[in-house]
Length: 192
Length: 192
Image (cartoon, rainbow over all chains, first blue to last red; front, side, top):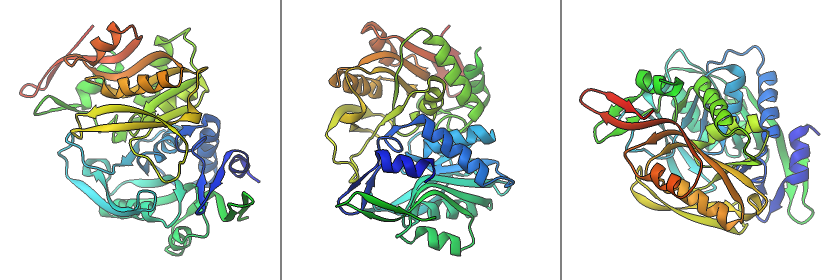
C-alpha cells in the first residue's frame, strides 16, 4: 500500500451508502504531511509535463493545489461555486452535478485567469463521477488552454469518472483508487 | 510599503462601493510567491506563540492556512459553510454575516477536530467587520481551546472588525491595513 492507501485504512471511515469519510486528514481537517506527500507524488507522476497553472475547485481542492503550486512555482486558480459581488469580470462557466449537495452547480473562473497559452494541471481531492473534473476541463477548453493532466487524491473506481476521463485521452493520476469498500467490515480494496 | 501593500498597489483594483478586488493574486487566482511570503510574515509576527492548529474558513482562507501550517508543521482545520452528507459528526456552529453574499451563514467545525488542548492560530484573507473571525473565535471557545492569534492578509481599517477584536484582547496581525481607498483616483492609504 502506498502512503495514502495506508492513511485511508488507518484514519478513513466507511459510512453507510458507500460514503468514504476522510475529513480528519483530507477535506476538513488537513494533515499537512499527507498534503505535502500528495503534492510530491503528483510532481513525480507528471514529471516532464509542462505546467504553468494548477486549477482546482473550491473548497477542499485548494489545499492540494496550493502545495503542488508551491512545488511547481506557478499560480493556483480555483473555480468558484458562486458568483461574488467583488468580481465584475466576464467568466467561463462550467456545469457540474454535486452528489454531495445533490444539485447541479455552475462553476466559474474569471476570464483573465486562464488563457490559450496555459498548460493546466487539474487537481482535486476526489474523483467519483467526474462531474467537477469535466467542468474544469470544459473551462480550460473555453479558454483555449491545454489540460496537461488530472491529479486526484482518491478515486472511487466503481464510479464512472476515471474511466470516462481516461477513455477521452486525459492523463489521469489517482494516488489511491478504491475498487470496493464495505461498510459492515470496513474493508477497502484498492486497485493496483 | 511592505510586500503585500506593494502587490495591492500593483495588481489590486478598487471597484465602485469601496470594493477592493485582489482576486488576481489572493482569492481566485493565487500568486504562490505572495502566499509563501504571507505565511513567513505571520510566522515572524507570531514568533514565540504556541500554535498546534491553524483554523480558517472556506474557501479563500485555505491557501494561506495551508502554507502557514506547512511552516508550523501542524494540521489545518477549515470551517465549512454548509453541512455535507459525508459527515455525521456533531459540530460546533458559529454564525457570521457575509457581506459578500449578503446573508447570515452558519459555519461548522466537526467536534473531533478542535479540543480544549488546542492553541489555535486563526487566519483569513480579509478582515472587515470581523464576522468570520468572530464565528471562528466562538467555535474555538465552544471547544474550550485557546485562540493564540488572528492573522489577516488585508484588513479594511475603516470597518469595525479589527478594532473590535483588538479591544477584546486578541493578538491581531494584519499584513496590510487599508485606512482609505478611492475609486476615482484608485488611491489607497495604508495604516503604518
